[in-house]
Length: 75
Image (tube, rainbow, N blue to C red):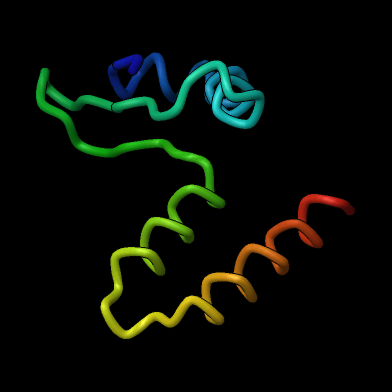
């Protein structure tokens, strides 16, 4: 897990997003005044984690989400 301050995040956002997309980093913490303020993560991991954590989400819902994410990434 990498941590950067807001100034570095602003000046190198493209590089940080590339690192997340390519799997070099799973998450990047962005700190403001030395305190964690935000977390940069891949969309697919965030969506899947939310659905998986939901007690109301059925296994069919998870399968539909995974298929939709695969279609999204194939374009």
